[in-house]
Length: 126
Image 1 (tube, rainbow, N blue to C red):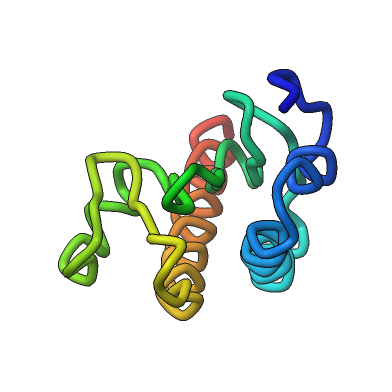
Image 2 (cartoon, rainbow, N blue to C red):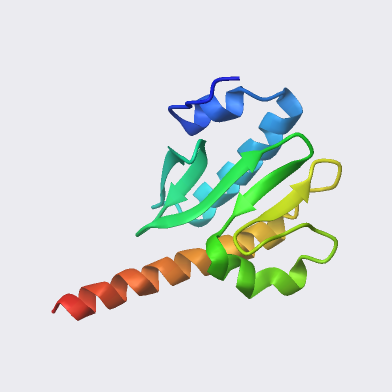
């Protein structure tokens, strides 16, 4: 597997079809929720950017890692029952259904947070 991916497409294509489907579903959901966000590869994984980093996601041997920053984890940690998580990431086991509703709410939260910060910066510059 290459270590220096140049695009989310290349990253996703490096996995087996079942993992590709999960990654593509997460990617499509984020694109649908925040169509103005742009995609990039950062820290060797796919990321979305909206006035700064929005969320990252990545596949591993036994889970999909989802990285919505510390604030995204803190705001939803009460919903991570049965999941491994840390101050900046949550793991979705590959042998369980991906919680798309939870991902959706986290992405919406992070997008609103990033928009508010961008607006505050704009006001502060005036």
